[in-house]
Length: 325
Image (cartoon, rainbow, N blue to C red):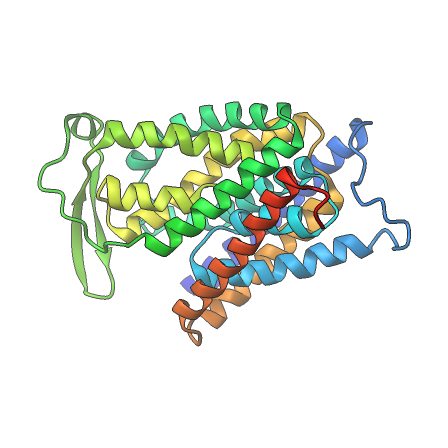
């Protein structure tokens, strides 16, 4: 009974997200004269590129779950590097893609007590403000500069994925004064051990400063920020890995919303890109959850690192040497 109710609520949440995205994107598309579909190839029918985006997003959704990364960090470099879409439209769609996944997962994570509001809200406030600034900077800069910076950032993410280690239960001997005053601490139930885990955090001022950078990068490149949120929450602040992953997912629903409005307001969100991408990512994520139990995550992680590395090099080439290939 409970599982049926949970499935029904999940379907309802996803349906609401899809309808909201379609409505918002359609309004922007109808009211903006400068936002034209960036697929000038007249040899194909209008539905060709949306179909390509749907199939590609479905595959990326599977990879995102298996590799433990957000859909946006795969979507933006691959679509901008290998498909004929302008980078501004790709970044706008990338933010909506990351936002849709976060909105679908957020309520369930809060109900289970994994995502912590006291931990998320101060970080979300900082990241949201600077995500707006980052989105404005990204839309103001020339495309070649943003493409070059995107390539460098993607290659940096590859390095982080190769070197980063996760700690299930980091040792935090004493919380700092700021986390104590904000009461950022808690207890969650670990079903694998059947025990309650008490946790607290430290280095809160440093983490707030890091989330300034994370917010700017999330808005500027449309990547989402799960790739950066989790290491900061887990390795810098000392939150348990499950709390870090769940809180990071909830954070995206706030941070990406702020940046997405800037792209919406500037006409950089197109329904022909957003709708098939979001539907593909979501369906791919559901399929990825089923495949996860039968696949070795280490193999998928290596594949994702290779794909991101190629996409990062392609973005660098587009920014620095656009006529090379």
